[in-house]
View 1 (tube, rainbow, N blue to C red):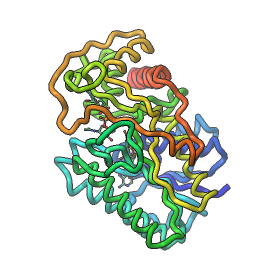
View 2: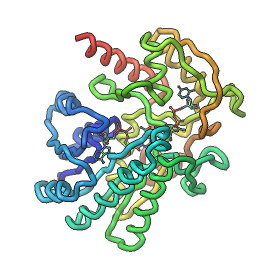
View 3: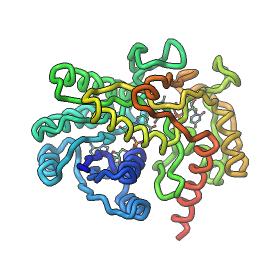
Length: 338
Ligand code: NAD
Ligand code: UD1
């Protein structure tokens, strides 16, 4: 089989996608500037798959480096994960988010065009739905952004839609992720947030591990079942398999697609806390605080299109998301103790 270039390949989702692609028989080349990941991921991927993936340390905004990668490998498609993803940071550094996420995507697409590689799987986000009119959210829902990070994803989507509309040789899968969580069940791959975690699951894991005293629950007066925010959490291994399904779809149909990757099930913050306590056997102390600015009450996916077009459905339950995140948290603690 031909080779897939994975940008952001040492990152959280990119590394899981690499593992699933390799397990399905593809060769991969990973490219990353290591801004938010470490090369240790490459050893762990090799331990997991029995094969060492070639790695290029480069920025997706470096045209010459991209040209070299396309010249050195027979790339048949690109999975583009490289990007910055912190909503809070995007308010402080809006220009950086535009340059890195939008400029990076433009530079990648130009290099792909020069190399006549026109098949792309892009990491978009449910953030492009902004404050949704209703749930579950279908792909046809209005698109809007509530922060510079979300705007950067919308601009990338617009650019890629434009490209595909103008030149039918381009096949682009825009994958709108809901809330990815968990880790590889081997505990070899997972997310290691630097500093205070922004997201719920890594925060809960650190409270359960005794690294933080309590979870702050952002808001208890949302119009949801228990007043806390509801999200569509999806196991990162399911998400990675969704990428393999999307790649097969564009290969076989010769067409692009825009599709949600979620479970279709809404889970509240308190439900997540209880599930994590059950999986870890540890208590998670919590305190209610004000809502987080920019948060929506409920956000979960309509999943019909993913099932009918890609033949893919998320399989792993909340208990597996929590058990795998906890195993990964313990592996991180063991690493630090060494
Ligand atoms: P991550 O930070 O773990 O991985 C992204 C990787 O890209 C990192 O290894 C980083 O070093 C690299 N990178 C960033 N800018 C780069 C550049 N200019 N050139 C080369 N490498 C660069 O994040 P992740 O959670 O794996 O997210 C992957 C993609 O999925 C991102 O585009 C993100 O916006 C998108 N996404 C993530 C989530 C989520 O909750 N994790 C949700 C929706 C969408
Ligand atoms: C957030 C981002 C989103 C991004 C996604 C993945 C915001 C406004 N949204 O989404 O753009 O794509 O992360 O990176 O930042 N919560 C707490 N306490 C915490 C952390 C979270 O109560 O310490 C609550 C939140 O209010 C929310 C839920 O937990 O109701 C999930 O939060 P989070 O994990 O940050 O994911 P999203 O809100 O889906």
